[in-house]
Image 1 (tube, rainbow, N blue to C red):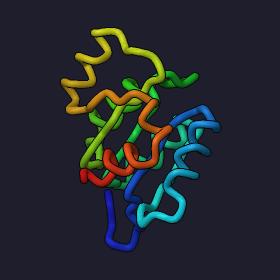
Image 2: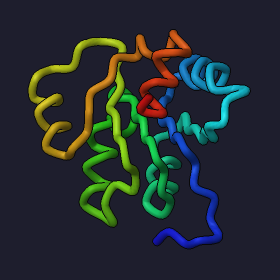
Image 3: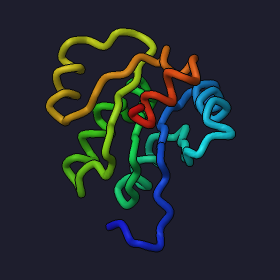
Image 4: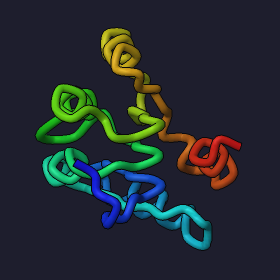
Length: 127
């Protein structure tokens, strides 16, 4: 359950690749967006079960839980406490994964967007 005393991050990124986390962190430095990131999907799952965010980005390929499994676990519990949810991948996802993501109300996102600060900001702010 989310309480008023907890900080709500604008963006939460879950990706086991530290390089991706560093890249996004660098792109968001000196912006007004507050980022919380996780490189361990199990730690992220525990956190996300009790904390809300405006934007949640989850990598599809991770060692213990893939991104879709993590999102399904969140959806079956308290729900996904985020306004905009993205499943990210460096490679094109199989059709069945994209379909399951769509059923959860999750949009599929290419990691290429992380390379360009303007594209990333547009995605995260909706402008």
